[in-house]
Image (cartoon, helix red, strand yellow):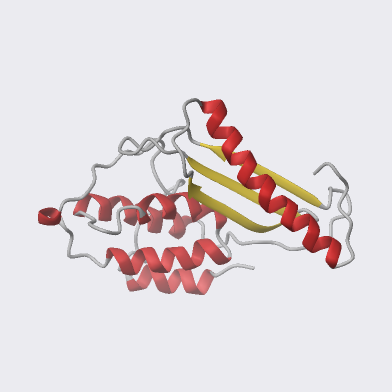
Length: 188
């Protein structure tokens, strides 16, 4: 499953259909200052965030972290935020064919869960962003990217909080599959 045509239309809509592709959606460890009302951009920042959110929730988990990061600035984005957000479009330009592939794969465990955290990467509130990916029969079925509710005091605590969030969802997923007649091998 891919949204090639939707993404091509998105690039055209924001005049980025002729841009140069780039290999990553955002810079590593990017830190941007919070926007102020006097520096608010006139660009359609919210509109682009909405379009990217749709893509990241449906077929493009690779966009989730970047969209999460830039959506934090939706209250008062600046031209600097806008220029970094356009980098996501440049990434999309080079990855139009990426999508989700669903197939029955009996060689892998029924459920696989992956989790990670970026300990205190936000310089303003020092909260950690967690990311979780859930696969059923080797196919990505859902993913989560969100800020943790508490400030972690160590990278170990940040990772543990991410694992706890993943475990809660994993328990629900195991029960759902059991209701559908599929028993997962435990432990996941």
